[in-house]
Image (cartoon, rainbow, N blue to C red; front, side, top):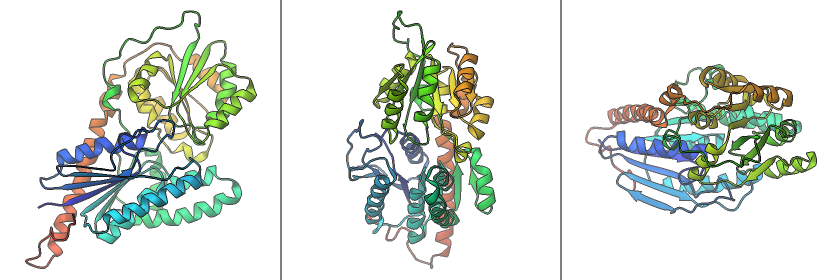
Length: 415
């Protein structure tokens, strides 16, 4: 019995971000495990994560049992207005693509709520099962980061949308155990799954020799790689932390985002010359930069909502065996202390604690074999794919049982 699955993800290969790194291997796992004759449609965007590191990709790719549609987005900034316009175009085009097609299951992976809401709308229209993969609590976050006059009304509107979306899900996966209390309190009747972030194969390969160091500069190299946005709060911590450690360490920041200019301005205002900003780069080049570093750095802003999240970057960092310096609180701090050896946690935006945490690290590389075995991406996505396909099969059986005798269950599945 054939069937059709829709995968909605705002980011997909070759984009460089957590959403892409999660969705792309998941689709491969679904293809490998799905029953013969299953068609998988992926609707995503043309690469757009970083304007300073854009890779082109075909708008439509087809292969046996798989179609990937990449929707081109208008040029936009990383602010809320720009992101809203980009998503509106994504949703409009996605609805056009799915209009003539029928689906048995819709899978939506969403760090921002709107991709999940789009998935819920399509699943409702198509009478398909809905599997949500929630990577962030958007309502919780937006109420914390917006200015006070806007926060209450905006969070309330999105809370209603979240309730409508989650109420239509047949199953919800949460990437962080820190989300559990939020969901149990609001959506106690929704079945939950717990497939977290994973480590990609590139980071599990035997380490290459680190690049040669300049013997004239004995300071430790502390590296941050990833988004430079409001959530990371680098503009709030790095100027003061870099100045406090300037005799012992220098920082390298690789990435881009909506607060990069704010970070640059804060560094200039503080007179800091021990922070080097580099643009986004390929994963191969990034691995080389990781190998050249002594410490890998992570930071989240001092907002209550961030106490529930679990940054995917932690898994990448931990896999490399380097010391990890993490300015995080809440569940992320608990995870680091429990799961990652030779890692030090400090309160977000606390320079004094950051200095003490750095001083507590042993600047040596140590393989974390048990961590990498437990959190390999292949282990995570294979489990998630099995869970999705269980719901897919259950829905097909249930739907077929309701059909009148003689009805073809594959009728009108679309082109």
